[in-house]
Image 1: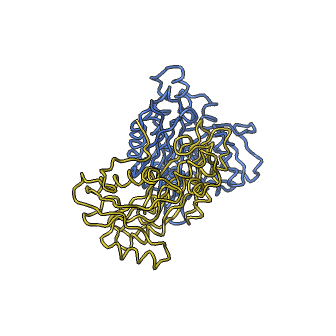
Image 2: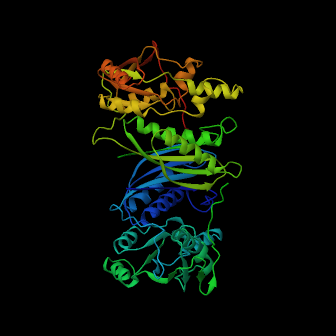
Length: 263
Length: 263
């Protein structure tokens, strides 16, 4: 059994002038389910706490959380509703994984390929479009209603991924986290950027919920993805032994991405 | 496996001018663990989300949550820290209970005795003492650092409790909830009030986390409590068939207690 939690706070993780209350709930569910995906877990169920001020419908937030949970096969089995000066959703998810097989951030080994399950930056580009009131932009849905990569995480686990992390806070920051946890470095040479997104949005935007997977045999992993009807992932670089080496496209990378400032 | 969640919001559930950040964390852990107690579950583990503004130490809130979890044998195994305009803690708890034996609110039957595990009103009296700056009052600790009745809930489950609820929002309100869920009424004749608390605090205060248990044989349950080294519970009334009958000390009871207003 794996057990994880994630919170979304209006004004911090999500701007309720740009997305609806149901989107806030959806995004919190997906952020938590994505933590299951990054371990290669099968989803089981969720509990959802919603706290809202009087002008925001608690039930709408909960409905968004429930819809996302249903889409991911991870039903909401309990919850708590309360009033609060700030709208907030906290989700806890249960998943299952065969004993001892959960993939962590800390198993990457020098020589492993670094694989990304899809293009990144779409959510950040969608947020920017909303700020410019371009509500028809192709990336808006990626910001409002992201999807976790459960099937891809499970295939990666079965095909011997050595480490995995979901891109929740930015490709750069999440790569650094994986490297820190594994005590290794990385060299990235090119990575897929979502159509309509900038390179900066792709590196620093986060909330795309694509998976970064490290694996000894990237070709076998790609074949397994295709065999299961999933789109082929991209090899974007290599894990190196020296933890001080953090290169992206030939330049030393400073971690950028969305960081929660906590005291 | 049982899975439940509860949130505590500063200014709504808890006044941070009167209690510390660690108390906020403690109280959120206990509120959630008490939900396990009310099902007769064995505690397993918790995840804790903490959101705080810059002037409140996230780590202190988390430490309080961890301390309470440890005291109850339910370790914190994961969490999420974030910034927020409002301090909030959301806790999700896992527990276990033999298949099909979880006690619910909905099983009370006419003729069952209504049993209360201890005096109520202490937490509300402690809050009132803090408001009057009487920090040495005997009830202050009951408000800051309540304790869930896990062992009592487990004994009640083994000794055939028909229904159970924890007094989280007030004896009156929680009795009405149990009666509503079970489709029955109740007649209460006397109940233990914590030393230093008023009858109104006992009926409406909540957050004492005593358990209301309904059971066919109250005497056998009391003996089981004493055999296990627990203080004997009090029989406070009887379940009746007519769901319209809601009597406390000879007077028709309107539900009073702490209610979350949600839109």
